[in-house]
Image (tube, rainbow, N blue to C red; front, side, top):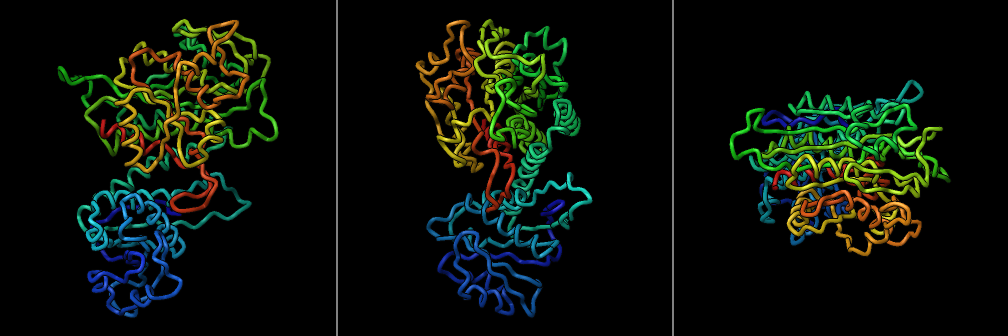
Length: 498
């Protein structure tokens, strides 16, 4: 859509964007901007419904702007800041189609009339505009035509809206970084590539970084990564990033426990020896999207949120491939916490690598809380579709914080149950537990129940299964077909408010 979107404080713009509630005309302030009356006439046209995100255009014969876009805000009584994400997305689409390079957004009178918070509205509009601006055409070659893209300068009416607009665009930039990582094909986005991307983020954002690979994995008994990744020439690794606002010299009493984020980063998943069938491998480059979201969130945390608390991130990176070295169904794996796992399905590999990270975090990091993101189960897609992420969290305080962040970011979560009976389902007659129960009952809960064996009692922990929400199959609102960057904004809001 756009090569970049920048917020400017002043200067002329090609396009003016105004808002109108359903069944209403231009408010008095907007009407004063409509010098020629073209916008008012456009609002009266039959094709303009006023529904949220609907747009009608006018071309004034006089005045400051060559084009006016009037966007519907829906019913006044139902208006809320969150609705401006789809509005911003639709406006961005239209600006791109018009090949505009500058726009001024004035929704100030509408926001005030609806008694909404201007900064919150600016943020959500900016998120929608920034998210629809994403494109990834670096893998296009000479056999096709690349889309012509422009830089867009945008300004917002009112200090609060303008500040929110800048914040929302910055969050969208971090989410778009995640989306580009997701879109990158597996012959490029190897485990080594993910390490290099993490290293670049660390360098750019002032984060510290540590990586375990090879002998270091053996030394620390990271059995999941070793076994899942050993069939691939792209060797597994555990990547640790830390945001520390205090620098090396942490003031006494200020260090505190860190918020810990963990991402499943399977750069490709063939299913291993339990091979995926019926073209089930297509799209498995996105099995790394939990790790991509965590890396995007660390970018946002370091550059946008800047909390006064340490945040530590882990990317458990491996490729599940096939060779004579591949791990097998019937293998038994022993983890550093002593738990033994009978492998019943090599396609249930994500939980095996996450278990390594969770063991280390609980043993070594003294976490205030742990949140993991993973494209873990197809079962959560069956249960919740693409509307909600499956959330598993038995700590009331942590769950409330995640739910509040979900409201802020618009990335919806739905709590699914965790009960001792589900843990019993994972018991093995050979080892302590199995990695997958052949009985498909409670399929998405099985994954969470497995992971719970690697989280110490008393550590607040939330597992987010993003398998249904990390990609969009619709070209609608603020997303096109492809990765959504789900979780980047939620984690940023979560850390901001923690």
